[in-house]
Length: 415
Image (cartoon, rainbow, N blue to C red; front, side, top):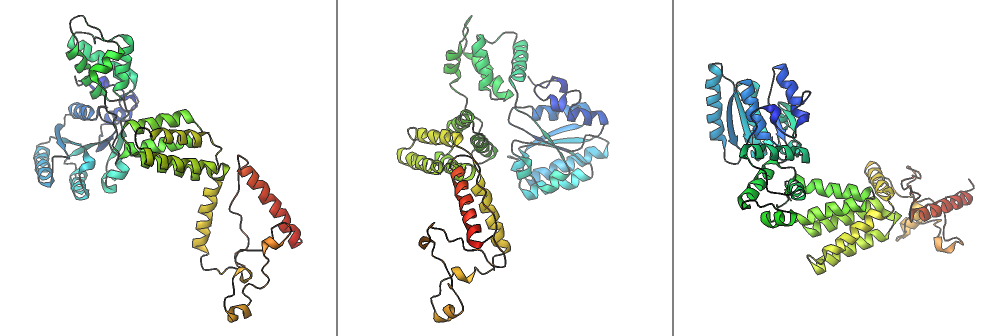
């Protein structure tokens, strides 16, 4: 059921439409090496095959999972022989990110001298998984997960080829498209299961469909990009005060089997980074959720994490403490050798007392306001302003205190 022409490929119009990136390359007559990056089942292998056919290159396919240096040398030698008689080679390498650094480097000479046009396919972010030298010689083409329209197009083509309709009612057909999760190959596999299960004149509804196919496991690699994408999406949704989206991404990670304590730790981080002192209770609740899950386990403890996610998503937001701490860290690195003013240093020895350590120190609790207003910064650096509370949540109250202390400090210093 692979498309026979590039224009028949579904869901990648940004690459293969009239003004698509690949269309423009083909039109220019200069293809060059490419990296196809995208989720499974989005047409990477199919497009590589069709590119070879359209450009009259010999198509050679290998998988990085099963190939080593000896296999690569053999492929390169055969490509050189073809080139000597005027025949180009398009080498398609599936899972190219599986090759180690030395194996990736072995492509460089044959890419540069034109022995091969490399088309590498990867589901992982090339920026993290491929050598800079390889990336500099290839153009990255991003394949997108298929939307519902593209999946529907695939199903209609399958029905035409099979000469029969899928035995699903309208709602069940929509459910099957959603189950495919943007993966065209998965959609066709699900369709095959339905045809295999259906009896004569039988039509399935959504509940029957779910029972037949059971449930397709989410595409999610806890050690790779899916892991980072979803935790990033959860963090951004919390920061954006959207509890519904936050719960959606949380549920997706639960559904995919993500480590619950990893999620709980990240929620604690959200509480200190994006809420901070605008709601000090957020950290308490996030940490309590982590402890509750650790005590209850799954599935009972998952609700505690969900409660914490809702709380941090709906809490007032402030990164003032986060920004202030980063600024303080930078100052500490730049001025880490400066001595604090002697007035605030203890004098445990007679010599230090004679040197003026602690001389003139004002004990704040002895003042009427509980505030002395003295300087605590190194004399060579002077007073700095790092923490700027926002006018939201509890930080509004902190801002009032700081303004009051600033007023007192000016009064006491005679400014």
